[in-house]
Length: 196
Image 1 (tube, rainbow, N blue to C red):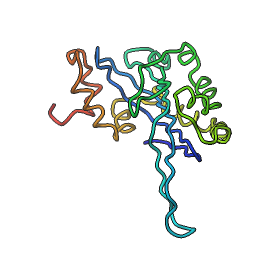
Image 2 (cartoon, rainbow, N blue to C red):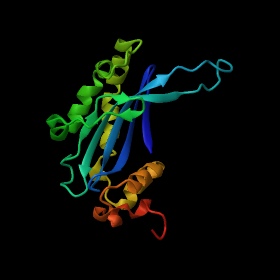
Image 3 (cartoon, rainbow, N blue to C red):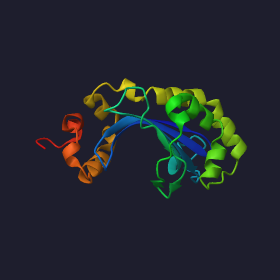
């Protein structure tokens, strides 16, 4: 399940994410928050007609993750991606503040989405309005992210339920592991095909 906070020019998506490190097969999970652009759509139908909403181009991502082999709630794998190259995130960026106080760090970032976009090389048409709209909902966005924190996901089955729509991505990770012998197969069992 994803929460989508859609504004005039930007949207903030919040979800739980499950990740397998491709190098050493360690497992991470927690809240993923993305800033994306809303793609303008032509008006259709009558004055009462439902309108298309397209949220596409990613701008920035925060992954407020725990390692499953680490201390719950320590945010040992928390990082962010300050820009995207097309649809692909840049390398992970680490900041001690993300691990020390992830929810405060997230709230401070949501206070200046125009600055985030500018740093990512994206110019918003109306930066002041985007800042005001997102800042007004920052508390709700942070609350949604907290509701998808790793410490609230107590089992492999619950993690799978929260990320069922990403099964293809998990299968891609499983297929490209450099050290599959290190994989915790019990923890990833809900994503594995029957009998695997």
